[in-house]
Amino acid sequence: NAGVTQTPKFQVLKTGQSMTLQCAQDMNHNSMYWYRQDPGMGLRLIYYSASEGTTDKGEVPNGYNVSRLNKREFSLRLESAAPSQTSVYFCASISGGNTDTQYFGPGTRLTVL
Amino acid sequence: AQSVTQLGSHVSVSEGALVLLRCNYSSSVPPYLFWYVQYPNQGLQLLLKYTTGATLVKGINGFEAEFKKSETSFHLTKPSAHMSDAAEYFCAVSAGSNYKLTFGKGTLLTVNP
Image: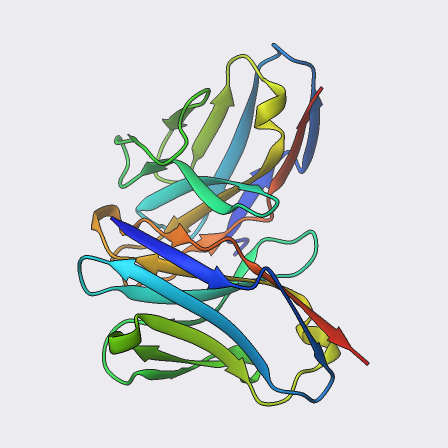
């Protein structure tokens, strides 16, 4: 039982390049989330998927797209990376219910030059 | 809408001293409150959570927090700090649909020998 896994762990991009961050969970959770973490800002929600087949914008969705490929996988795509997207990205999942715990992946550290 | 304010971006204590990390929240509906810990270069791990019932909540590693509705607070405490407690701590609130978490900006705890 690996929990929430993310790939890659590190990535360096040039401005304008595209890439997809992958996230998978093996806990049969319904809801999945993408956050970004910046120094002094805490974690901010980019997009979430309440259930398979649905996605919704969070607090900071501009410049990102997501795909809930199936119940296990939730990917985050940067179509044209910008230096402002340099951040650490975390994926999380939850079984269901506000009282449940969100489980976090180890993060992807992205640098955009 | 919901929000979280963590007072003090950096708290420094001596080993064996009391740890007090402050968190105040704003929510239009009864909140569910969480404390997460992040060790360097790792993801977030749940310390404890308040959902309903007893307002004093005990978590892992000797931490506890008390929900005070009248003060809209959920401060985290530990009687005696250990070197291994050095990390960043995040308070979060979940009070809406789709189980989204809103995080505070974090408090970095330093423990001095």
